[in-house]
Image 1 (cartoon, rainbow, N blue to C red):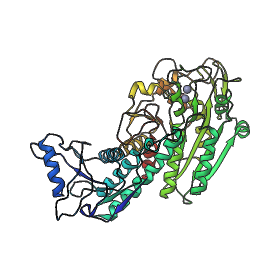
Image 2 (cartoon, rainbow, N blue to C red; image 1 turned 180 degrees about the horizontal axis):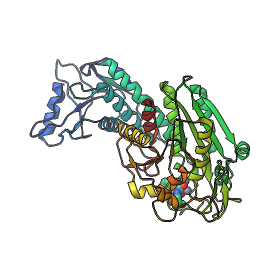
Image 3 (cartoon, helix red, strand yellow; image 1 turned 90 degrees about the horizontal axis):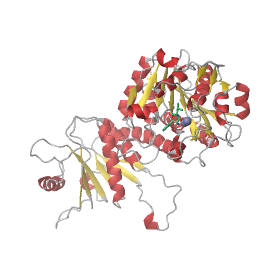
Image 4 (cartoon, rainbow, N blue to C red; image 1 turned 135 degrees about the vertical axis):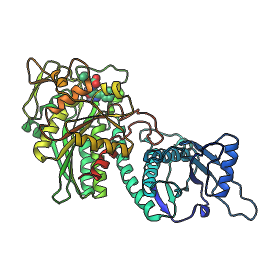
Length: 498
Ligand code: BES
Ligand code: ZN
Ligand code: ZN
């Protein structure tokens, strides 16, 4: 599906669905709309108390064409913007609401009138509406068979945005579409079940992105991983039939600019290993690779946009975590890429083991100005932040502030958790340098404290998306399954990188 600018005025549009956005008024006043016919419809609905213009409230109407009148669109959709100060996120949600409503109708030709009488940038409004429209119309039906044509879910082919300031609307559409396209790639990867998405699929996806966007590509397979001593990744892979891989994608501007390193957890299925998880929700652990998907998609968006202020390197360590013959056992001791030894307490705390190798290796190889890792790392983050905010932990206040701001702009909210030395004490082991699990609560923090052992002095931030990568708080533009969280935050951070 696409979003495009249309130079038509809404009055000239005679398609299937014409959309107006209106502000809620205070007191006994109906929301105002510049089109007098639509205004009349809104007033009738308002008098019936069916529509007041609250945020994301919808009014669907079928206007009549009187004798001598030019025909209007066959359907009119009015969406409320509420009366609070306008924010980027509202336009994303409204975009999603339009997409969801349009999918329920059989509308094909759709035009959204971008309101121009509001105290809000037309470009940002168009950007966020585009994001919402594209993200909200996403469906993952690849593995479903539909017996009859009628059973197939409706799909949107495209939506036009209309308004006087064509330049601003076009620029907004381009920015929003680029971000959304990357999120959809991330969702496509993450929604694939474990048997359709293995470490090798990450490698294939990396090759495809590298070819399409002229990116540098490195793939480390079993033998190279062994030669390098990446035993975190190798030991998690020990119980699996599928070989591991570590994928590196490099976006280079060719200029003297700082490098930002992104590391994403690409655990394609997490059974827990010998520390087997309970079976009830184990199927959800196909989503344990959402961090890996997010960093690849972020690089895709950066490359498509051609950012000039920053080089970006994405690393995805990938394997599944299975309890097969030869599997890693509780009590085993392994040595990570940087030589630190780890006593395995739980084989289910595997994400930190594969991330530790990737972080230490990436920092050594690329000497980045900053490193950000993103991972579905701990169930504990759901206990602390629920399914609404992503956990943020960092050794650098300025990086943490930049990320929080990027999260705010993208509607992917973060919340910083502390990382005092005291938490790290929980990881002291009798037999090795570290153990992989703390024992006194604060599971999200001790996981981050573990990772911190592998980043040295490099400014680093860790995003724990276990609560937000799927099944997060419902929003019109977040569809069922993987949310694609993190892609837009990382893109927003890199767009503004100085
Ligand atoms: N992939 C899980 C974390 C997870 C849990 C993500 C629930 C999404 C929802 C991770 O590998 C894990 O199993 N973590 C353990 C750590 C524990 C053994 C210290 C956890 O959170 O239970
Ligand atoms: Zn696990
Ligand atoms: Zn995991």
